[in-house]
Image 1: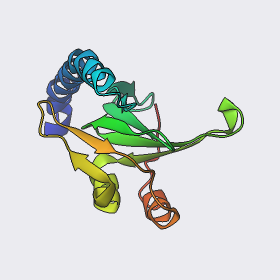
Image 2: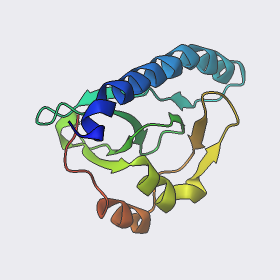
Image 3: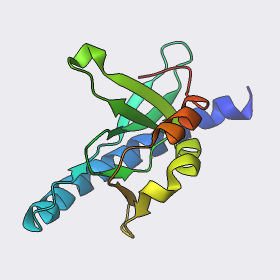
Length: 139
């Protein structure tokens, strides 16, 4: 057995625990936002499993036109809404790649677990760079 195969159950447990911690934090942040009349969306850390490999990953959504507080996840789903839901364009990018491209739009909030505030969607130039790092499988 390779080390990666041995580590997978532990890494899956870490991902499940992190997602649960973000869900526990979410209502507190939503209440704080309401008290300040801040219409920020508090994103969830969603769990996804690759049907081919069985690998578990986490993903959060960064939607166009929606100020958000993003949890640290394996991937960010960049969502550009269409006229109908089936017309939405979704781009899945690994967190580190996305942060490198959009770091000017992401502000760490200094909380535990950490979240990043985003108030603007990536520019066309940033989106082009993000497309070059898109992941091959989605949730």
